[in-house]
Length: 201
Figure (cartoon, rainbow, N blue to C red):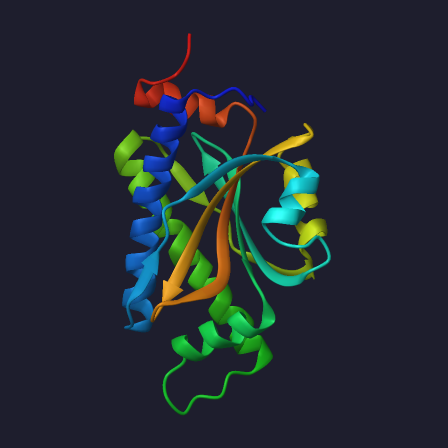
């Protein structure tokens, strides 16, 4: 992974993430019929030790939904949520009087991520005029460190530094303990920068 991106390249990437995340937040608001806001995207280059110190403890148990991005650009979207926030999100999605079983709750969370990711990608497709599709969301429950390491290895990212591209969502002024990450295949960001006209020589 190139760790020497220019300020212009990182600003362009942040703008893409901002547009995509804004679309995702709007879709989430429409889904639950309640206002949802998104923070300014976080884009950081961290060592693995810093990742678990600054983002989330390595041994924190989370539910994670993984969705692969395929087509002209490849990568993995990773939506992580702790148990309490998962229950809150599912409750918001369920009609009044409906009791969510574990199976129903997991299906609702997967559908939520499917909507978020595809809303995100629709914005990128329009901006860059490229072809992108997504895989069926896969839900897993494990320690944050194990999930993140597996995703990075699967994408062929073997450097000690990892790029964190993260959106956080807020509902009624409170942060939903969930985040949407994007882990790109090597070379994908450089391809996006070239399409935007900000790539290096």
